[in-house]
Image (tube, rainbow, N blue to C red; front, side, top):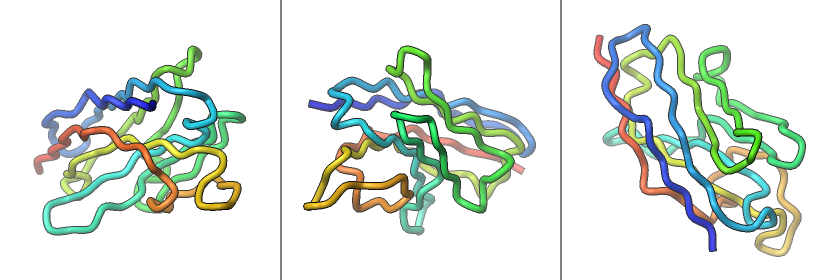
Length: 130
C-alpha cells in the first residue's frame, strides 16, 4: 500500500517561493517514479516534474524549467518541489503521484505521462497573486 500526503501549499505574491513536501510510504517497487502534477481551475491536470527514485534522474515541464526543483530526502521518505519565481500562472492544486517499475504490461520510464502514475495524494493548493 502506497500513501502520499502533500503539504506546504499556501498563498504567495508573484516572484515569491514555496516548497511543497510529499510524505511517501510504500515499497520501493511501487514508488519507482515520483512526480508532481498540477491542475488549475478549468484546465486539465498537467505534469510539472518527476524523478526516478533509483538514480535521481529528473524531468521538468518546459513551463517550470529553471524555476522549480524536484528532490528527495536522503531517507527517501519525502519528495520536495522547490518553486521559485512564482507567477499567477502557477496557481493550481498540486498533486504528488507515484508509479511502479512495471505497469500495464511494460517497464516504465521516467515520464510526466499521468497514465503511468497509479497512486495519488490528495493535493495541496498553491495560490500566487500579482
